[in-house]
Image 1: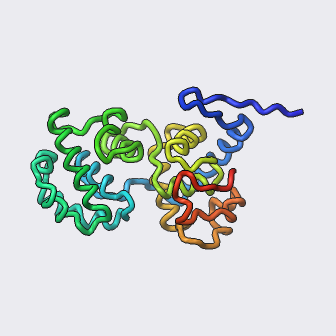
Image 2: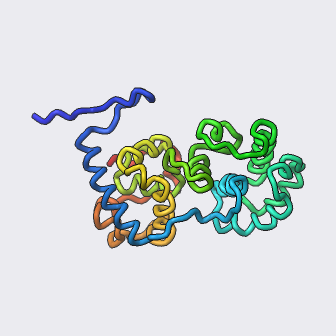
Image 3: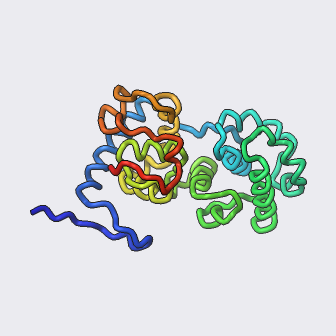
Length: 249
């Protein structure tokens, strides 16, 4: 009889991945990294920025919006509001007009202005450099914080799980959850830390250029070849909620 050893995730009160499955995922992750590096040797965030504050604004704006659209808006936005102090002084309606072509612009304007004021008042205008400090700012979750820490400060604390990473992690059998925080922990458990920073960029590029979210035949995709079950899993728009059922991998 084979006994499956389960490690308990004490911090979340959640039963962890069985050792055998964890080893299998790590072996798969090693192959995935090798293929992604060949496909996308240069990995970088697609958002244009010149300061940590500009990156923060761009990432907040990018929620449910394409990076391309954000890059179209930010040049004029950063010219009008060149510093965090300038944003902190801005009126809500004026800032909204400057980003009106971005989805959810009212909520994003409110969060960006509130975050700017907090950074000016509490951090003397400097974007904080820790996960705990970043994730209490309005509009900043772990994904945004991971991107800022990695790309603005060279600090790696986790893996940014956006819609592409979430979809592909499920599709490639690297997690059995749809919750971004659990997915991040699952990915951190199977990928070496030195790969975390670039993994987001490479999976995003893979999702955009090879395996998009719309329904398609991906049997001949590079990563599907090392994990054939991925060909049968389509991450549909209706499955974006964390409570939707999903094929367990």
